[in-house]
Length: 117
Image (cartoon, helix red, strand yellow):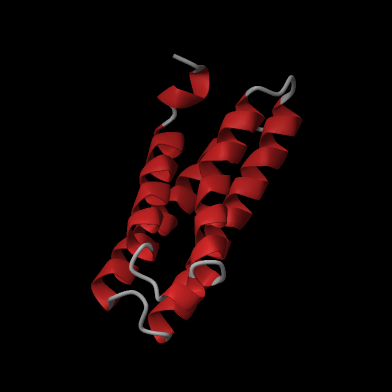
């Protein structure tokens, strides 16, 4: 097992990406390469940046990748608002993903602070 796989924030971000994939499958065909693709890429970016950053040689580098992961989390939040307004995602599903993003954002920020650079 790689070190990043033990991180709760990485595990939760992988779960978020799976949920985003599941929900975006229901998007209209004309959005498959638009908003659905953007949401998927942003969601995948969260766990990817946590994993890549954990393999860096310095806390400063890891911190930078955590900042990118945080930014990707905010992208998903913004895209959730758009998807809900377009009625591509039910309010209950959007609320669940929003809460998941809040938790991931808190955890990412906490991990970044723990690096104390």
